[in-house]
Image (tube, rainbow, N blue to C red; front, side, top):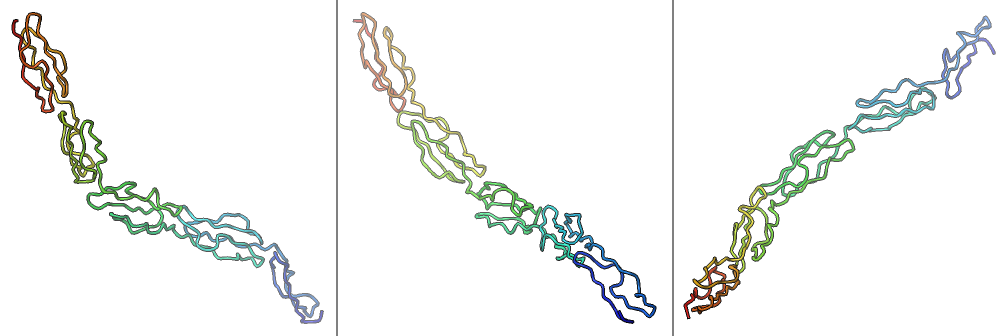
Length: 272
């Protein structure tokens, strides 16, 4: 090599130069500077994103690190980076963006309170007057980007079916707030309980559930020197008989009517 000639020194891929990359041939026949060396290339420690961390300990050429975010945050950008032969990472540090659950669907016959829809935020559901909420009244934005629980619905306030009436009937098929149902008994039956019931805002019916019981005519008594057999309820028949030596005057049989009165008149026994 001639005087004042320069040589340029480079390292193979995966290595970096330590020392001067250029040396000059001097008049004393020696090269300027010190002999450089090639050492394995490495990348600097990558910077962790705010609300995140770096996973991976190796920093040599070809090594990969991964970026992860705290719960409730997602990686925005490239989630991993590779150490290049140049000693730099092939992609910049990503950011951690807070999870957004998005605006929930509107609530029919109700409203939603809350305008922030990111991780940890809460929304409340409310129904219009005389309607009630079926489902959770509050939902939270979760780390998976979904709202907790199932979306509620508003239902018109109902007291439920009050039931049918044995030996009678119910009039009214609407069981929502403010509606009235009416009960009546079949002929020959007497009602105990409420003949009308109204659905209240608390979801309960006013009054008590009625029942229809057979009418009772009461004991008319047996004639002197005679006897009677039979029951006293609606439709039942009493039969009268006199003791030997006596004869019956009047109706031998009487029937209990729907109005709780006996047919005919009370008989009596007279001596023959």
